[in-house]
Length: 274
Ligand SMILES: [Mg+2]
Image (cartoon, rainbow, N blue to C red; front, top):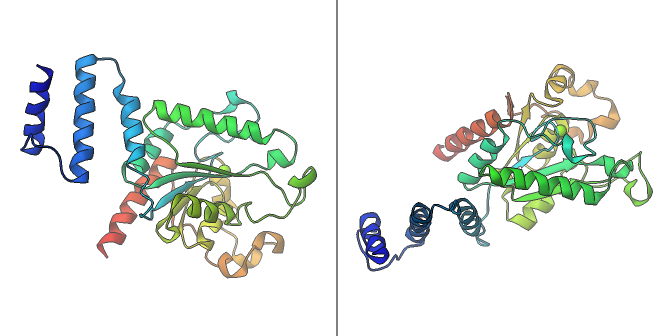
């Protein structure tokens, strides 16, 4: 009986019961079979298996992916100063939907975060990793997942031991974006960064990605103070690379992470049509 049903389904979806030949069909076929399995067994396993399937079809080493680099505190989760205990980790209401949208559109979703709390001795690198694991689990329960996590534990003036240093990874330096691009096959010129501070935008601009400022976290404050200042008014130590400080206007100012991602999807379509 079960066989008979499967054959009917194959015929209905693919017009043939003689196997599936193209890669796209194969993926569709696997999804349909998993859906059937769920309907028959009613055990709720479809979600986990569909997540695995989605991930397995997302890592083609020959392909260059566009990415959305996401700042963490104030963008994905509420800004709470230094996030030093797990119960302070609260995702914004729209976060899972935004990341799911990135997943479904074949882009990589990558967290890029300055965590100078490590340098300052407020928490350890292991704790940062625990926060990221917890974040990933919560998102997966809501049908979304993050392709990578990159953090900078250093600080140029405050810090203990080897954490006290001028590094190439602390935003606005673009080191984390460059590393992620190498490790995850990302095309930076087709990518975007979303964050609540101008240093997030600057890191993106330095590697040819577009930058979107969100109004959550420190976003409103950044709009009121930093955006109104001309590049000449920036004190030298904040100015960074003078060539890029001229272009520090975000490509878009979004209400929150979901608004930002919806803008990105529209922008990609416009770019494709050109
Ligand atoms: Mg932030």
